[in-house]
Image (cartoon, helix red, strand yellow):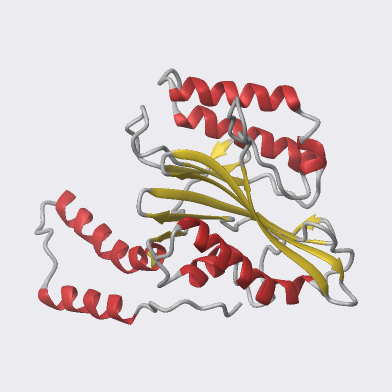
Length: 284
């Protein structure tokens, strides 16, 4: 989160993973970092898509409508906010194809409350067919676009990982290095970051999607979760209920104790799960 071009907090997880059947997208964003009440847009986007098991592209359209109704009213009061006021960048695999989507809110005239919301699918047409490989958004964009050699080197690292020659950690650390360089050029960008990645379900690498937090170039310690919406279910809230009991069971097993939950504990977990909200909410 930044105010007047200065980072005032750097603990937000600005990514939401969205699964829809075999399709998957990682939604990152720039613009509104946190509401005055402390709600992060990644949490809010999860709430908007909760209970809605729509196809991925339709889910992004729903999100765009919600952004124009809710996030707009906050950004209209931010001095100097102009074009690309809030951008959701969504690299995705749809039917096994890599596709880049953007949901972009442009403020044309804040005083007159004129704005434009656009949902775009970035894909070349005609032979040879190529996919958009890099998407950039946020205040660090002017610096990043001048770093073509670094971006080419990053793509080569990704290619090596896809061939099984290097680990995902090596690629993630390079993303963190680029973020750290941007932070040195732009006061509104913090030095810490979260890097998330996914794979085609039927691709050559039979690995699970994952994410990693960085404090500068060091791996972040402590519990970190990636907000996830799977077929309309808020998995973040779901796991928040289950995680404490899972950790307790593991601790008991390590201590040689019974790892099974008591009937009372099982009932308490079921009750907590039943209380989780299942309907969409645009409240920001």
